Image (tube, rainbow, N blue to C red; front, side, top):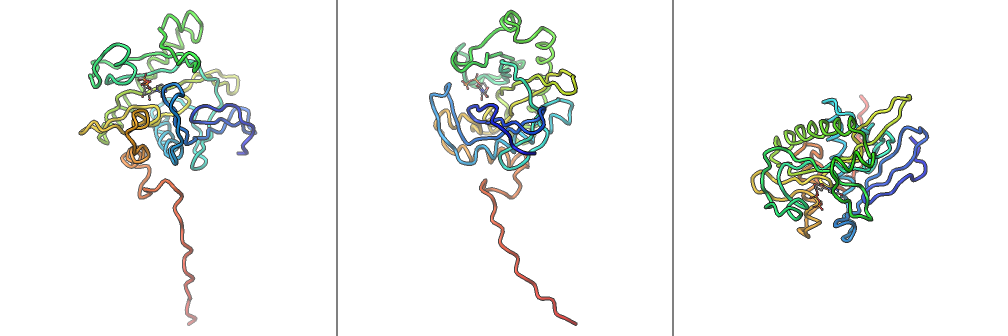
Length: 261
Ligand code: UDP
């Protein structure tokens, strides 16, 4: 699939058009940003790991019936995806209190929530992605009530699946953020999961030690971000023997002489 014009460039990804109007190429950059773009850096190899991890998670979600934009991974940094119109709401699901929730409401970091908590944030960098209520979403018609209720159920299913998947490899899913988009294929309108699910968009703690294995390593200057993302990929069994994110060097096989009989 030929890469066309750049349609959109975000903080960590670029979306390119393709020759098919319904499909796009999602390119994962190495850029890391936090605190509404105030903290920035380039972390070599992050895009490659997020591409692999997000591909793994979205293809597993597809297998349990969660429709999403992933068509296939094309190369180390790129995926072919369905082109969608992103709904301007970030859906945050929390199982354990951390990050902005603790600051906003004074809840102690690490408090286990009895039920998953869903929060909505308006996707608007200038306003710092403010938290909004269900009533705001309906009042300003970012979604209708049926769409909102359907997405609420969908994020709960995603949370159940991800929690189980990560628990199985000794990781606590503290919280995560997802985005949905409207796709229009063959005149059929549907809402599907889009964007990415990776350690950039989740909080993931080691189940035994509570060691952070996600973007908080960058936010809080803890270092070893790539090692943490590699650990996630290794535990999910998607990196196998490849411990170095740089392309493996293959040596040319030596010619073998075949003796004539
Ligand atoms: N998150 C994200 N993108 C954002 C904001 C949050 O992926 O623009 C993720 C974040 O990585 C965490 C969860 O959503 O897993 C909850 O984030 P929180 O509201 O605590 O915000 P933060 O502490 O990142 O400001």
